[in-house]
Length: 360
Image (cartoon, rainbow, N blue to C red; front, side, top):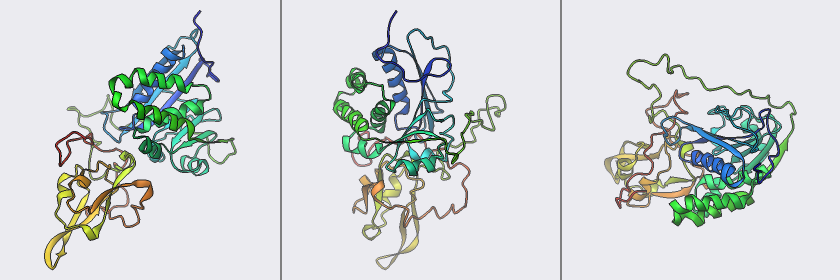
C-alpha cells in the first residue's frame, strides 16, 4: 500500500486534516488553495481535495478556499466547506468584522494572519476563542521580496503547521508557477522563505474571554429560489458606498496639497472617482479645488500617481503613512452607516497605464 511522506499531526472524526483560507479577491487565496491541494496529492503522498468559493471574482470581494488531506488509505468523499479547520489562513486583517472568519476556530486550530500587529492585539480584534495564533507581516515581506501576499502566506502556513516541508512547497512552485511565470520565480521562492522565517506565535487557552463561534453558512435575502426574474443583483459591484480599503496591497497615493495645481488629471484617470473638487480660488482666480482622495474608496491602483504632473501624488507605504489623520470623506455621502460597505470593488484594477498604454 502506498504510504504518505508526512504524518498528519491531527485529524477529525472523518480522518481528515482540514485547511480553510479566508481572503478577498486579488490576494491569491484561490491559487494558494490549488497549490496546497496539489502539494498534498503529488508531493506529500496524501489523498487530497481542494476547491474555492467565490462570486464573480471581483477584486476585494470575499473568497474562501478549502483543502482536505487524508492518509492514502482514507478516501475523501466530502465536498463541502471546511467548518472546523485545523489550519486557517486569514489573508487580510481587515476581514475581521466584515465577515465571520473565525467560525469553527477552536483550541486545536492554528490561525495564520497577515498583520503587522502582535498576537494579543489580533486576538482581541478577531475575538478568537482559543487556539494558536500566528502573525506574519505578509504585506511588508511581499513588498521586500517583490512577490505577492499569497507566497508569504504559504511559507508562513507551512512553518505554522509543523509538518509541511517547505522544500516540497518550493519545488511545487518551481514546477508550476516557475514554468508559467519564470521571471517571477526567484521572487516567489524568496517570498516563501520570508514567510517561513518571520512568524510570531502565541497559543491561547479557552479562558472564557471570547465565546466559541459555531460555523454557519452566510445566507442572503435573495437566492436561487426567490431572486427576481431577470437576474437582478442588489449587491452592486462598485459603488460609492463600498469600502475598498481591503483591496490595497501595501501602497497608497499620498496627497500633498501644497503641490497640487488642481488640474484634475487624478480625477480623470481614477477608476473609482475618489477625488473630490469643491469651488474655491487658485492663484487668485475662481477654480475647482482638489480636496484629495477619499481613502475609504481607494483600492491603491496608483494610476493617479502616474498621471500627476507635479508630484502632488506619490506612492507611499500605507502602514507608514497616517492617511486617516486628515482624511476627507466624500462630501456627498456623509452618513453614519453605509449599506454595502463590505461588498468590494469591481474587477478593474490592472488596466492600461494612463501614460504608457502598457498593462499594469
